Image (spheres, rainbow, N blue to C red):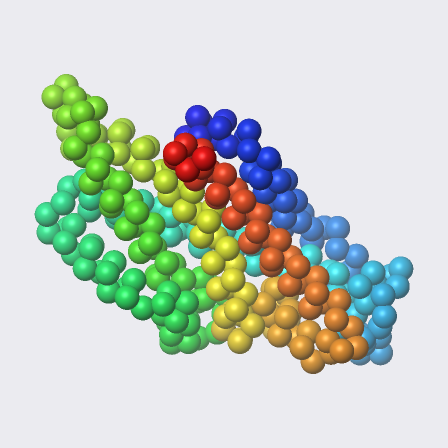
Length: 275
């Protein structure tokens, strides 16, 4: 993995994506402390105010600071996406690697579940589960975790099935290592870089999913700020003050783009034949 990172660091696209990712991470973690106002504070008398020194992007239809809500919403959206992506990567790594390495009944069962879930659009399944669980960001995240793990699991299974036939795995067995030791010492470390690439490329889909389902009311509950919810709110006053919509859309596009750049660079570093 370290060799892959060193190779990726020589790619200008990776550096560009990394700088943008660090910017969004900083905003997500610390932006709420720099927000000029409380993102939940309403002031009907100051509704739809134009940009000013006090409100750099103006206010929404309830008099809330647009800039404060977009900054705070960044933390909600990207933090939720990072948690979802982390869980599905770990779940996919464990289930997929175990199925591919051990084979047998567990492999057949895992492959059956994976094939069934992959036969449906993931966002539609997540939508159905989220609707059944009810509105709320925790329920939305749980729905996405329940569906999105199958793609990394399929990748991990394929890599593990290839690795179990390698000479260094056979040598480890001959030296007295048990199957579980071989799995954790050799298979998982060699599978993880492939899932790291997948995670960087896939987190954009998670960001889009969280924003989209929040846009239709299945994510955060008002008045909590989240990019998808902000877009939904901004529709009612976009002709008066489109800045909330424009800044939020720009944030979504750039955050997805930066992770795509990182993922592409890591994939090229992991597979030099692509260069």
